[in-house]
Amino acid sequence: MSFSPEWLALREPADHASVNALVREQLRARLASKPLVRVVDLGCGAGSNLRGTWSALGPKQHWTLVDYDPTLLAVARARLTTFGAGEPMTHGGLRLTLPGTTIDVTFKQVDLSRDDLGQIVDGADLVTAAAFFDLASQGLVDRLTSAIAARRQTFYTVLTYDGIAAWLPEVLASAAMRAAFNRHQHGDKGFGPALGPDATGSLAKGLGDRNYTVTTGASPWVLGADFIALRRDLDQGFAGAVHETGLVPSADIDSWLAARLVSLDAVTIIGHQDLLAFPR
Ligand SMILES: C[S@@+](CC[C@H](N)C(=O)[O-])C[C@H]1O[C@@H](n2cnc3c(N)ncnc32)[C@H](O)[C@@H]1O
Image 1 (cartoon, helix red, strand yellow):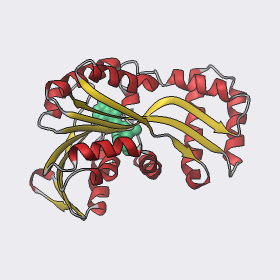
Image 2 (tube, protein in one colour):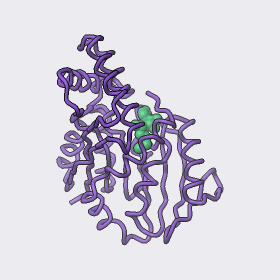
Image 3 (spheres, helix red, strand yellow):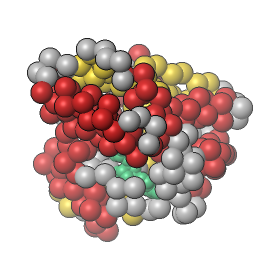
Image 4 (cartoon, helix red, strand yellow):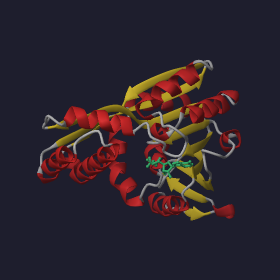
């Protein structure tokens, strides 16, 4: 499944504004005083998670950004260079200089559906991901939680879709649209049947069973006039996904979408969960 750099850029400000501040504070309390923190970011896309999370960590950070899409890895490098006055390092890395913080970044092309997860997370203090785990299967969660627990690593993931989708103004088709979309979320996104809205529960159970303390918190998108381009793009994506399910009559989807696209003050609310887990 591929994601365009334009879509990731469009969603990034909303993502950063939505992250759960209480869960983020717990991450800061746990790791900000560490002189060096080594981070692996799974499904890094264009590097949004680093740009959103670095300020909660300590003065020296090493990030390994992994993704299977070489185009996104190249875009991540370019966007991070601009973001943190990036200087190239040996072996293709990048050194970012941000207020009070130096971050060395390494980029790795990795397929998380196939490659050895133990090797990918090895050496990290923190394994993280953003907007990724709703794509994952139960098998991936099992393999990953077991690799992380074997290394007693901290785990932090943000913006996992949780099944809440609401649109204002509410119309008759909304409930059927939501049910169809949530069915679509369980389709195969490259890892086998996806967990979709069940992903946070599955991560929490997998890590809880492995002797981790787990905290979760909501990080919903509330997309009104401030995020109108993202809201319209998302509504279009929703309609497309619902069409694919065949569960809602096409005419209902089309009139739902047409009304949303012309509206200037419609609101879309998408529920997400953030999760922090550390070994007991
Ligand atoms: C919704 S995007 C999120 C990107 C980024 N974390 C962000 O917050 O903007 C999901 C990311 O997962 C990556 N991805 C999907 N399947 C993957 C796989 N099998 N191996 C590695 N990366 C994968 C995609 O290329 C994409 O960058």
